[in-house]
Image (cartoon, helix red, strand yellow):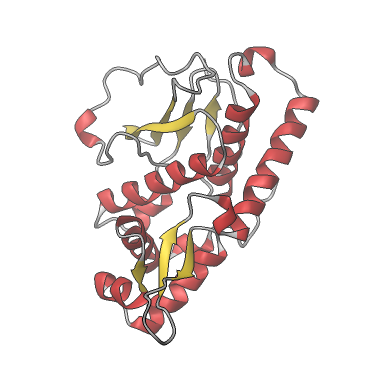
Length: 245
């Protein structure tokens, strides 16, 4: 399926990647605070934030102060689809596509141990990775997603940790937007020359999968992972919903 030309244009600009990270790091910041934190002119920051909001990455809201006059507008990352219409549409689209594919091509082995909630979380995650051009290869039983080195890394190649942290938070927020047991367990960038790995886990309180005990292949240098446990990264490419060996 051809990729929509408007998908995730917001993250094609290094300044927007840095601005998104600033929102992620300091939720509830004002436009001026975000502009100051990134070194952007306030008008430039405003335009970038409008694009990020239009694509479902951030949301804005007025913050009451109790004082007279117009309350300041603050910016937050989207971790609830009710916060942003674009995020809601993307989740609904992913759920519909995933349910349709499972009806057309049922594979009991691939989805064994995963309940409907977990499958819908995977649908949303896959939709994002595919739309972003990250060539996801999804191993559902083991809850791993193979991806190629991410375009955000190339965009901000002077700050790899920034790129990893930004997309790790995006993935975590996407999983949070869809009720279910899955969470982002780990990001393993560059497990090979052209491969990164997203590792998911299952909340034992809501649990529904056999995958949480699986760990990434040995030989991966843990020190390469700049993202704290519970966050993770993606990459660049084609559509491939596969069952890994």
